[in-house]
Length: 389
Ligand code: FAD
Ligand code: NA
Image 1 (cartoon, rainbow, N blue to C red):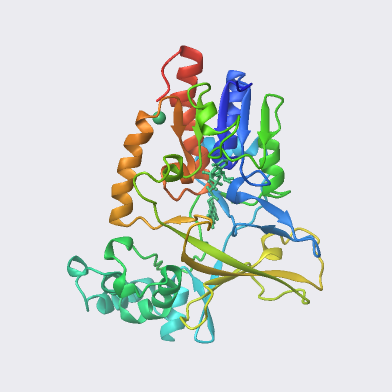
Image 2 (cartoon, helix red, strand yellow; image 1 turned 90 degrees about the vertical axis):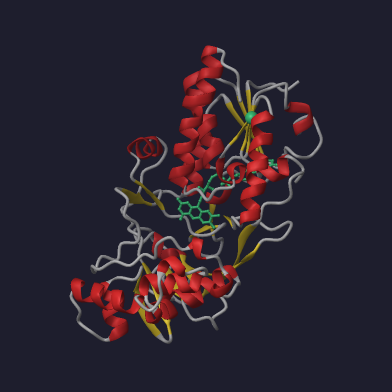
């Protein structure tokens, strides 16, 4: 028998938020199983040993939210810096601000257009194709922003992100293309934004730090054993945040994901690119972007003769790769519906988080969803005796 009131599979933001609230508000004894050697899921970060610079191991993580409740909850476990995210892109040897704004448009066309003039120009160029008739990514994008801006800022980047010619990608993945007719180049529009003052891992550790919470690392719920699925399900309620297809042995087929490869280097310079993120829009540059992690924390004293730069490459995930972004093909959506039916029928198990719901979730969304699962499912079950489905 398992010595806990609730078992949580996965120690990412979703799992740890559920664990903490169940321990705090319901007094439950919670056992968190994590298959990796560390907590925190994809938000995990660590100091690069040579420089001490904090590196986000699974890709750069920027925290932002407009959700008051999420912001308040997060602030119980960490303070945030006043970091504001900005992105630039290199295209044919020139650097432009992103997302595409009035600054980008004027630089690209070598003009000094007003907002109204820029709207007029883009509308004129976009008139080349009709949005309603556009079936692939390229045509749809051109129908929205015109060919010149599409070819400079979207075609190469998209082709690299998807390893697919944009003419072969479905038009429906473009619903809107971010273009701003102002000089505002703040990347996020949310009310609150910042980075955890002493890093993501310290934040995640404080979230897990409660006498009623035990985290067991290197413990894979889908392997046999006393803490495996076969032994636990039916004995103790479970919140599962691993991949939903894997839970059911891929019975309905595998859901497809994109993954990222990271190439990390320590360079003997104090500043490599002058900014945290540089995108590369040219198709013949094989990576999509470079992150220079020191710039996420200008307030810290990092060495002035060394820096950490990570190149990011995007591709379809194979077996054994980390699943990062749902591809979400029509076949995936069919399979997901089948898995949702199976999940509903799985008594005493709730599926949540990015992998458990096959949805890209930002951290604030994962935390919001976790708070809702506690309110709507776990409190009614443990406090009022409602069933758990
Ligand atoms: P995860 O963090 O993925 O945690 C799931 C955990 O479950 C993992 O630790 C995994 O090892 C564990 N697990 C899986 N299967 C098993 C099993 N069988 N047994 C035991 N344990 C298991 N969000 C932002 O807000 N801003 C960003 O800038 C941002 N950038 C991102 C960049 C990338 C590349 C990715 C992939 C995500 C990014 N996110 C960002 C999203 C953020 O990482 C997620 O919100 C967060 O990871 C969601 O948390 P989660 O707990 O649902 O999933
Ligand atoms: Na269920």
